Length: 330
Image (tube, rainbow, N blue to C red; front, side, top):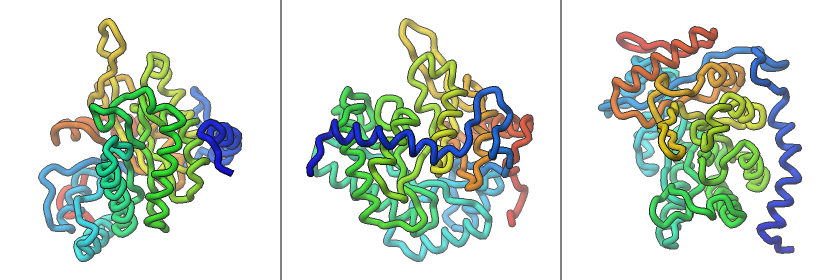
């Protein structure tokens, strides 16, 4: 029987609580150093981009290690270039650098049907590349109905119509590739689904594919004063409800530019209000070690300063991050 979007939403919500329990074997509440079952601490995989990257795969992988990264964004390579894919996969494996994610930043809900089909093909190609090169995931936003910006706000971005389209697109992408290792993920957004841990749970339930995972970007969820001030609680909620399904994470920071309306602005980690201590502790407690990837900075110097801040917080809280390597990495 054909179901309406609203009836699908009701069905999904009925399964959300059960999925949340399955995804969170224990609760870790703010103020508690650890909760039962989360005391094990593992090194946190950490990475960011390499500026002026070498073309040689081995040199590129070593460049990441020299910066103290054991995680990397997938290098640009065509899915048809099987020799280079193999060379990159083997080079990064030799240096013990995990390929965290293939980014495919296009609008899966573009108003132009031809462009929408092309964008779907682009993301499908990205998931296939992630599977072939050994990346953990392919990630995109779920899309936007905005006619102005491919990622822009629109009232229907939190509607049942958007939810249904996001479910259909994720199924199409995953079913076309049938990945055995790589996951497909939607990045959380402040003005489009998934815009909360619960809405991510709803999407996972509705998509109903083991190859659909979670990409965690906590700063993208901070879209109100309450979430800004209570971002630690929001972060713990993400890990409590989504932890086992988290595949990759983004590292950013936020400041509040005070004016006559609410204006949050992304800044370099360490220059804003985001507390990295609970972020790093929760990542260190996950056995599958999803990487933490810095993004959206302009220069190599800004990335170096951000990495210094995150490493300092890690040291203060007994969390292990990879260190820069001088000379040849092994």
